[in-house]
Image (tube, rainbow, N blue to C red; front, side, top):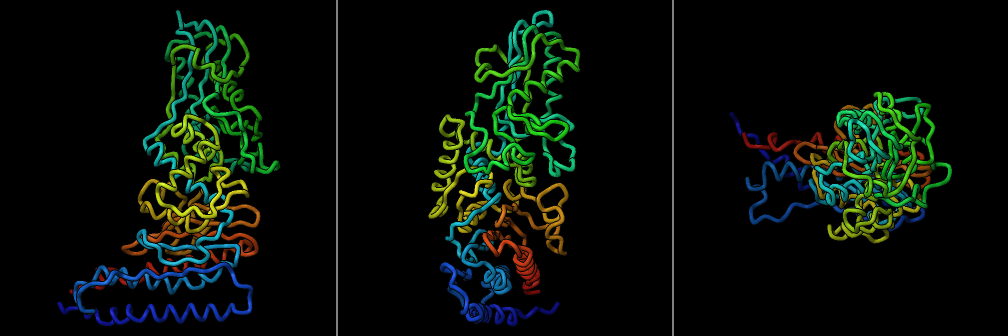
Length: 471
């Protein structure tokens, strides 16, 4: 078979940097009559110098393919890189290496893309195999009778639910896609031989503090379907079958278990109640149920943008690192872990773990650095919503050919904020991207998302290493 001549590809790769500079100059001239944005850093990734001639086979085919792809992405991203105004930012990386960005160090409101940071730190602190164990404690049953109270002890499980709660409704468009079964817990109590409880079912949410909502959550959000109260003992996100949200998570949880036990023929003497810390003195565990591993829960949190789950993870991080189930302890642990990773934190300020507070400040550089720590195939990337995937935040979004079913990302939306952060496989490489639009530019976010998709598709269409190999 005749050998393919790599010279055209090598010459094209050599000419791309010059074209990139010309393109960026044109962009700058076109915007000369507008107020200047904060300093813009657009940096192409250049291959390391090799002690070999330009046309040496040491430079091809794989390094050449990567260089051409990165240069193609850089050029194709010009419309995207020029889109953010002085209140927005964008960043791109290829195979973990920074490629280009606009206003990378500008502090912006991240909305729910902040969950990427919360999740990444939780995986590092707790481990992907971490599980939440919810226990029912009380006096050992004698001839089936529990002489006293049954205490339901919360562990911070964010998806403790009854079966009906996983079914979407008009109000709950994205219910949890992974749950820990309350029915299974009730069955376990019965399997332990319990037929009667002389006392009550008591809910204990003492693992975490009593703060139900982060200070930055606006009053109109609190207690609604997507913004339930935060508690170490939460069942069905404190939501009833008619989609109303209660004010007392622990009492709601105790009531659910009480009802499930009665449905199974267990008599209970008193009405459901709550008592923080009651589990410690209640006796040995009679029954327990475990959540799926954190690696699985991550997909539920990120793909449905579960706000309560994110806030619970913050408090569980606080328990693991500082022995305190509080938001401040968890956020301090997150900040400390980011510093240990070498993530840039200038201008960064965290006030919650879900991104609902408008007081949060993050930079595209910070988020990009977190994404660059792990490839798309790791738990963080696999937990994100897939473009066009039903039941997630990307349902009906980014459905163009080559993007739908391939791109993985975390969305973020608040009034005047639209954000997207995630991964895309481009041939032999993986592209990480962050796009956070604040202010007027967020209104026409579809234009920026289309520019991102065009750039990613252009990179994916460049010659692969096999195509450039000498046959």
